[in-house]
Length: 141
Image (cartoon, rainbow, N blue to C red):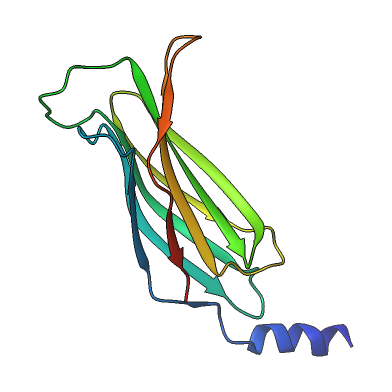
């Protein structure tokens, strides 16, 4: 019985990747101080758990600008949902730099059908202001 099951798993088709979906979001300020961009790609298959691979970067005041530095950092939150249920969420941050990232969203069971990306900026001081740009939603084919 085990040999039949193992043969079936070996004969199963490999995980299939859907078309990559580009994403982008920013902090919503006029200087575009913080932003994130990249791609989302879902993998489903009979042997592999359903995952969305996220690759991209988060940037905080890394480009030339006429705006003065503001002693804040940028955090991007990328959340995967199945319907209205949160499946998984990750955050990445940068402070006066660009940081590349690559990770998977998955809980091992549920496939993700949409991803929400939001960029927020936070003060580096213990007490200070914070703000977020509009959340961007991406359907995952």
